[in-house]
Image 1 (cartoon, rainbow, N blue to C red):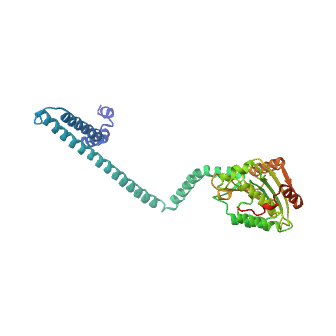
Image 2: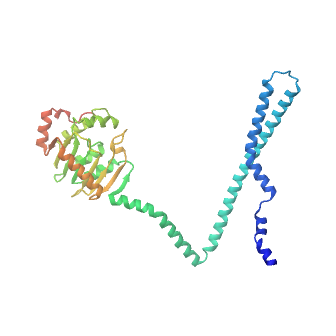
Image 3: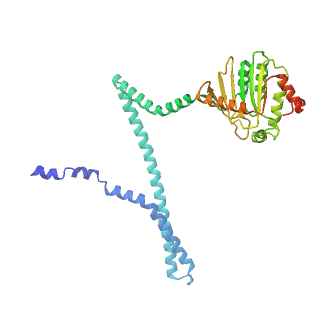
Length: 337
């Protein structure tokens, strides 16, 4: 029977141990209600003061005195309660920080003691490796997605001197842009490449009369006719010391994005840029694409489609000189930027 009685209340002692002391409950109650009571007392003080000052009885009236006294008392009580609440919050923040430091110290001590054992250290390392593998699956999948589509590297902006050096050593160059070259470093690299007789260059640019140039030039920070002048300058410069072969196609559409293909014996490297507002494309991020990748295929099809739709195609110096002369643009050589 005694066992049955004891079994009816097996957790009585535990419940007594778990139940907080009245003092703790009082502190919690004060902590939670002090903010509300503080504002309430201040509101009551404001109301009492308003009543005392808005009525028009004689100044030495006893009720007026009581209202003013009540306003002072409630205002002081409200201020005290709000101060207590602020101190309570500060104390809680201190306790949380102290607990966190203590917990971190204890965990560090326990881990250091456990990993002294070779067996425990091995288990710890294996579990940590599993955690890092799980955490890295998402990033790895994102990387593989970029890799599959063809993205190799992303540059914050185009290093014009490096691109100029790459073009200088290239034997094959193909470009799809509004105007090109758009920096003196790149222009120098292209000229040096064309000084070699074995170099092949294809330029797909906007026609000097294209409305796209008049839209793009101001958005890149130049005057309205800047892009047209740059295309004319490129065409007239090709009549100079170019020993390599070149082909030019001029269109009046929007290229979509600037792309540069280059390589020693084939188009092994691909650079993809952006037409953002405020600066020309070399000063914005560029992406290096794997040649032959899915993304490279998309860009090649865009290039081929625009080349086929071009309003003008020029294949050599003779055709270029005749084309420029008919339009009176030979005098536009090296115009002011």
